[in-house]
Length: 193
Image (tube, rainbow, N blue to C red; front, side, top):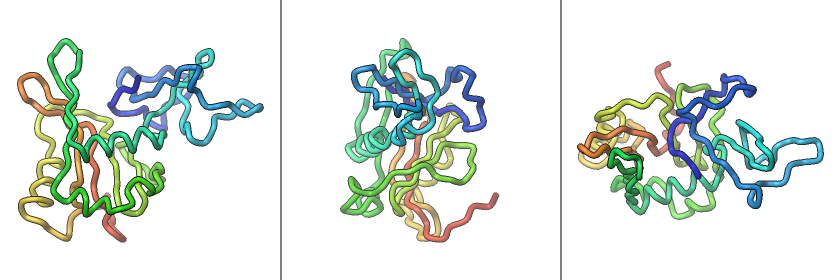
């Protein structure tokens, strides 16, 4: 099972158990990638959080298939009801600009972790898209999602990173909590930090 929440910080020591908020993927023994004779983790697993018996537990955002599945769910606008006792759901959405931003070869674009230091988990999809998973979750309307939707769909602005999609946890009362956003990359863009 995969939990779609913020993964552990790269700064967390690897000998500690992952925090309860950690977004991890547990791979059952039958599907676990083979380990090298020296015990090294295969490159497609990324940052290993734990190895229990024959099960590898690792940062789900290091898994190309996981990242592609999130993007596909945004593209198709999936909604997943959760049996969390609170009546919430995961809502995957895309903007009108998704197809243009993703391009015709989305499924063949390379997926890799961004090398820049960030307070969020960031994944690059080719040179077209930027997938960002929030590590610090906040209930309520997320300004980056809300303004991104407006500036991408309602009042397009070529000087911003356009929003392609988002994943939000929707509480029973309708209150959103942004989990992940997908943006178009801006060539030679810089941040203000």
